[in-house]
Structure formats: structure tokens, C-alpha cells
Image (cartoon, rainbow, N blue to C red; front, side, top):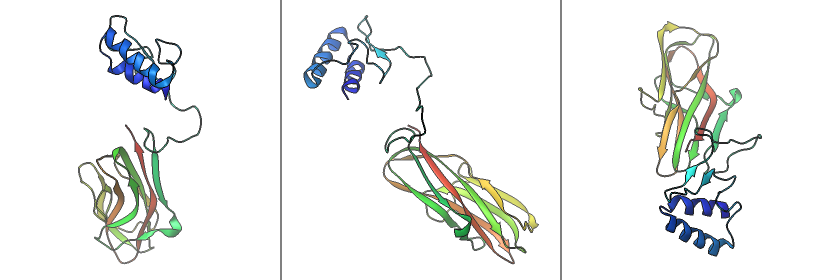
Length: 205
């Protein structure tokens, strides 16, 4: 926390005098500046600009260190990962030409990228003409055809096998907690059609 406050003071200070004042305030609040005095340290690669301007970045441009082990980003941090999986044994049955939620996740406010893998299981005699998979903030309703939905269109045929489609990666920029749905909508006849798979979202900033 001390290094974070020191980095923040450095970033906000715009002159040499302001740097000194900010340093004094951090020292007063935290007891002492983090070592080394003029470098924020491992938390942020920043140093004070001797010309009295804003801080300089001393790390390699374009390089931000990532985790070095198999851990998870904390809730609210960049990299936070939320997902929901529906197994084949719990596949969601579809009704022709009617949207259905394969699954959903609840996201807090922020900037997220979401994508779903939607797997279809057909009855032996099921004939399909369209299979649509999308990301949406509205239950059982496909997202924008331009950037949130994948659609497979064909002449009527009988797959008699599982088929899967990935949705586009969809940006969800949220000002408040929101539920995100993975939605499927197919046109089919004769027999059954059901969906399962995974919806995953990652906080990108």
C-alpha cells in the first residue's frame, strides 16, 4: 500500500516542488517513503523526473509483468475470470425458432470480453436449417447479428451428430452489475435439439 500511495503521489505531482510536497504527505501518512527513495519499486516501474515534470516509466515499453504461477486475479482486478459450464448430461432443450439461454453469468461493473462455446446435440432424425449462438444482456434473445452472434445457415439436412460453434468475442462495457446470457436459437424439424457448453468472461481493464 505504501508503494502504491507513493506511486500515486508521483503521478499526480507535476512540478519539482509538488513532488517534494507529495513525498512529505506520503511520509506523514505512511511513516517513511518506500525504498529506494526515488523509485516506486516493484509495484510500478516509475521514477521522478529530474526536470520536474511527470514521472518517467523505466520499464520496457509494452511489457507488463504477468503472474508466474497458476493463480487467479482477485475480484475487481484486471484478469478476473468468470465462467459457467453446462455439461452434456444437463443440455438445455430447444424449441424451434425460439431463443433459449444455454447458461448465464453475473458480472460486476467494468470492461469485459465474453465468449461462449455452444455445442448442439441432435436427435437421430432432426433436420436443421439454421443454428444461431450469441452473447446477450437480454434473456433468451440473441445479441447483435453484426458483432455478437454466430449464425449457421444451410439447406435442410440431418446432422445425426454433435456440432459446436463459438460466438464472437463480445465487449461488455458495464456501468452496473449485469447478467450476461449465452443464447441459442435454431430452426429445426422432426426431432430434438439441445445445447450445452461454456460461457466465459474476462475483465480486460
